[in-house]
Image 1: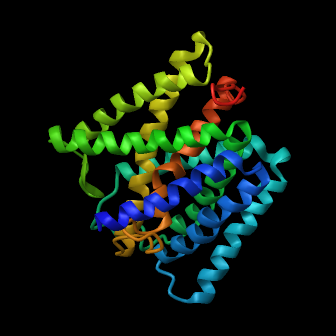
Image 2 (image 1 turned 180 degrees about the vertical axis):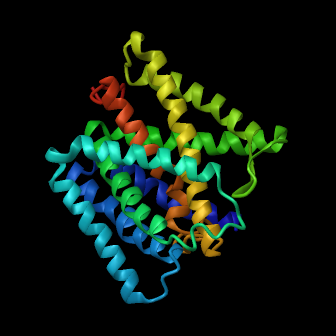
Length: 278
């Protein structure tokens, strides 16, 4: 399994970096729609326990249609898309906080996960496109932010983990792990503030934004875990050998993208240059 994970990562990482840095924004949007909307929508329909290929196909097409509408109506509904995405993750955190494994709540309300797919997948793709249009390096920065958080949480949880963060959803996650992730992400925030020339007066704001993004990314991870637990699947799919499905790899980014991108806009930081892009 470890060998498969390494090989898959070694193949995908260069492709992701080249696409992010060198693809024009419209091309990037089209390419990113494949994993997020097409494959992501297909895996989401699987977690909805859809077994009929026709129904799963219709669900994916509906997700793509909503994403297309969001793209072309961007000028009219820019603020509305931001509000909907952020409000959804506030609601999702509340759902995660009260989740009980033996509850029949979601079984009797399948519309919750079904509707969530449109909000989560479409908003993640939309915000990814926005972030890329600001500066492609912001995309890589966010990807590395969640990777650092995951790595720091894993090792600090292994070393010091005693208190479970969400035992009903992910027994392996600990509060100590999140604290370790916060430390790693804090340092990443300081580096980012320097690299992207964040004004000195906004360093605290930017670092707090990075920390908030990390915390919300945990909610993204746990929400996909909740869907997998409810549907009885270990992974969202099997397209990535050793990793599972696309949703298994981008679960953190699904929640991080709306928060981080909105935070940059709110703070007026979206157009900052970096040492790599003058």
